Picture (cartoon, rainbow, N blue to C red):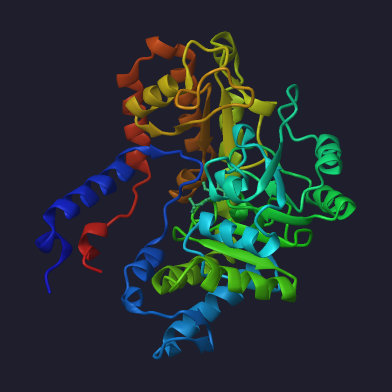
Amino acid sequence: SASLSELDPEVAEAMAGELARQRDTLEMIASENFVPRSVLQAQGSVLTNKYAEGYPGRRYYGGCEHVDVVENLARDRAKEVFGAKYANVQPHAGAQANAAVLMALAAPGSKIMGLSLAHGGHLTHGMALNFSGKLYEVAAYEVDPETMQVDMDVVREMALAEKPDVLIAGWSAYPRTQDFAKFREIADEVGAKLWVDMAHFAGLVAASLHPSPVPYADVVSTTVHKTLGGPRSGMILTNDLELFKKLNSSVFPGQQGGPLMHAIAAKATAMKIAGTEQFRERQQRTIEGAQILAERLTQQDCKDAGVDVLTGGTDVHLVLVDLRNSELDGQQAEDLLHEVGITVNRNAVPFDPRPPMVTSGLRIGTPALATRGFTADEFREVADIIGTALAAGKDADTAALRDRVSALAKAKPLYEGLEDWKIL
Ligand code: PLP
């Protein structure tokens, strides 16, 4: 049958454009990564054809003998990588995983308490327009206005006052680790379940470079496509058998129908990779790159231009740039970096005076570049390009900076030879 480019040249052309964009620019959106060829192959496979409602050994469809093998591999490897007793690998994405978690932990109308969206939390942790904000009563803790970090005394006080049924740790934009043992203590004190959403930092946890929430939380959810570097999808872990049964039922039939077996195959492959020394070394470069960037963005030229780094640095794979005192707002800074070939996203800082579509911040992450092979040397160059651009603001010499970006992109080629196997 016809290849994609023969049958549908319009889509093929847009895909070629996207491949070229990924190759020619520097991807620094903190939630993105580059999957390896093996993961692309698993996702573009005949497993997409198979219906497999149910779980391995207990399916509602015939012909599941091979996909059972795949799902068992994904589950076993996820358990091994994170040291968890049970894993559900069927959530189509992070938001679906989180919907299933809340469905298993609390009845609609119960109270949930997570980090405010405006201070780095995720939509699924109680944002008003999200299912979590519509179905549950919400209390949200915030970061301290001085340190810009979560203060566990404040979390405890609020938990004692609000008595949530579910206490949530984990975040989408926060540059430090959280104290999971303390969260556990507070959850126990107020009789709440503890759910940790480690979507952003799961790769660092897998590499033992970040505290693991698995020993402390009742349930841990994650995406697989951020620092973990696998297919776009979600996953849930627990050590509690009774909760595992509830979680299974809330994923299927509670939230989803047939699992995406091609995505689950890719998850299995991603989990195999996550268990390797190479993966650990890559996560190390990811953190090192973010720290190099934070250091550059706190130098004098940035200070003079009112550019700062929230919390003064980072422990993880991202840096939050504070532009409240800069001539650039988040939108302008995002556009400026786009012009020099660096892709980031604008991001509200806590207590942001500007509206959410403009913002006073940037979220800049290093996972994709670390996957591309960037070491400290290349990260120093990237950091200097970003620091120089933000310090110069509207006077930045964008053509010269774009040349430096192109040189880096050329030095670290991406998906070499991809055209040759596009038919998969
Ligand atoms: N949880 C956190 C902490 C996230 O940052 C995200 C994605 O941004 C999600 C969940 C949702 O993942 P998805 O976009 O796959 O639904």
